[in-house]
Image 1 (tube, rainbow, N blue to C red):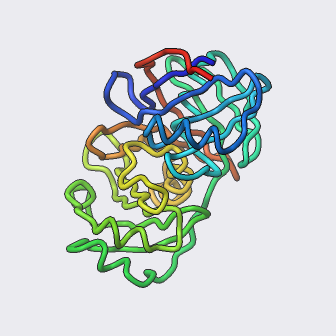
Image 2 (cartoon, rainbow, N blue to C red):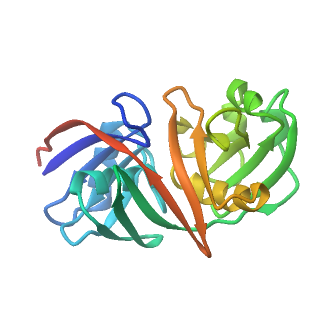
Image 3 (cartoon, rainbow, N blue to C red):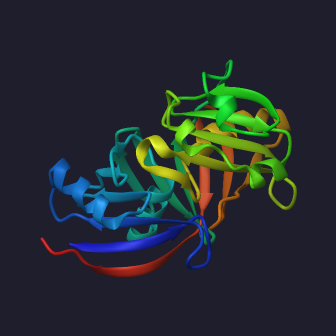
Length: 250
């Protein structure tokens, strides 16, 4: 089987979010795929069958939706792709050097902070708290607060969600900035999170009254996502670069 490492949501190597991509020759069992993902040690490893059934595993668990590993898989396969996944059918289309992905929107609902959240975000000026299908979304007072935040990651792991997104209006070329923390699934901070932008776009597009957004995820590696709402869908676009290609022994 061919195996790749692809840096997603970036146009240069060693930035963005690295993902493993395994081109299966036939379906494999869950335990084997989990072992491979643990061996790869990336935030996500994607497994795609010849008929384009796509699944995603962190080093610890299978997840329902992953943007950067979907982007990586579409980049490896090339051309227009239509994947069957646990989150429905996801299409990926080349778009002038980018790849546009059609994902389900995830409009978050405003809520009170869950127990322990404020304590896990020390010195943060929280403007609002919302919760979507997967994550809590926390709006902070400024992009600088997002960039300089030093959260209590173990505290965030106690939240009743996949993870926690912190975000604010952008301070440069990007319309918004964010960082994403997923310690509950073995990822203290994710470099660039495609699926989080299903929530971020649903939150920010109506507030900023923009048809589309350029979003920066301000992790150490960093990356950019284009996002637009299309009724109950989010169109996410990113670039990707192959870093490694090899063969996986059976």
